[in-house]
Length: 179
Image (cartoon, rainbow, N blue to C red; front, top):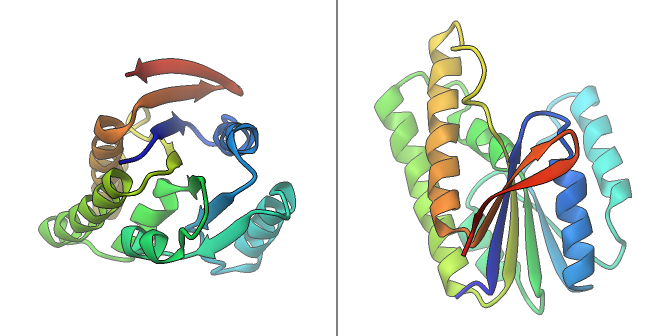
């Protein structure tokens, strides 16, 4: 069972990733960084490169756009901390251009069940990053609404399994839950 599961939520550029990395650095040198981003264009590749520069060179990196639970179990090795950045892109990867609500929900919920199982199974500390997208406007198109709903459900599942939940606002972690 996970030693701790720390879940960091917030808006874009709220300081989630920086705080997650600072926490991981304090907890252990043995970190498995799980990156869900895919470089589908030059701008995204530049963002990924900047993220890579900010990580400690001693950390191992697992780049995977999906199947996190299975991939983490296979790659965890001697890691004491697993940092997942981020669920926001994971859900986007899972949806692609999917506009069927039931199929999208089935795909995303299956992924979250596998990830929750991994969190329960492994004796490591998890730090998980995700965006909070439920506080904004209702998206104008169906895919946007499906995405918002699926990420909201994903965040609820992870928050339920988390021992600690923080909402990041302007770089400041605000405690929402602690067991």
